[in-house]
Image (cartoon, rainbow, N blue to C red; front, top):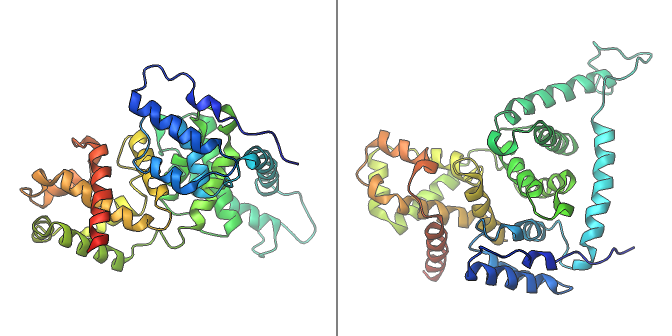
Length: 335
């Protein structure tokens, strides 16, 4: 059964205090979303510069579409939300359990792979490992106990269902997605189940992502040399280890180094790069380096490292960084 149409009209309500350009962006995106079948390419065209605080109301729907959680056919969106709420509740019941009851031939010291007690203790170890990161993840924005519990559940269930190990960095991804969901002005989109499934989709596309890949570090370094050889050579001469940037920037999509609003805006841009996400990460990183070039080009190793490990404290115009990244991407494709 198909539910009634999803509410799109509320996106253009309460536009007081919003600039005329941003009001127009909201209305342009709204017009695309009004179609029964969303024009994904048209949507990307309007959203590729990312959303500011004035346009962030668009983010919840746009992310769900670009991640593939929402189908392009709008009339199914309500159905997706309700169905996955039920599915997620069942997953929680099935996989988050208290200590098992006493059974013959099974006991707390058992190490058999089919032992309920053994599986219970393994679950406890996984939960505890995740919890250690969760308690220090985006404390300002997700410090409430209910949000921490949501984040812990999302990470735990993702690992358990996919039979994968938890690694640091996954918490940053899940935190941004959860915050996106829970801060949406549309109450229908404020739910843990959507955050879980969006996170699962993203993790599926990032297999082996949380491992240092030297060939990708080298590819980035070569691209930087092509774009700005003087800056590249100075960083090399100062013994800059480019793998540091890979871990802090590429591995977690700039999720840790900025105020959450800026990290979310960077992710807006990345999700618009359907088939070129990794490539665009490189251009974003180079654009950040160019933005900081004046200080980097005269700095020694210690000064350079201090700048690059504290991006949130630098004087950075994020709009300029994003625009330059798009320009660099277009220019390099012409070469």
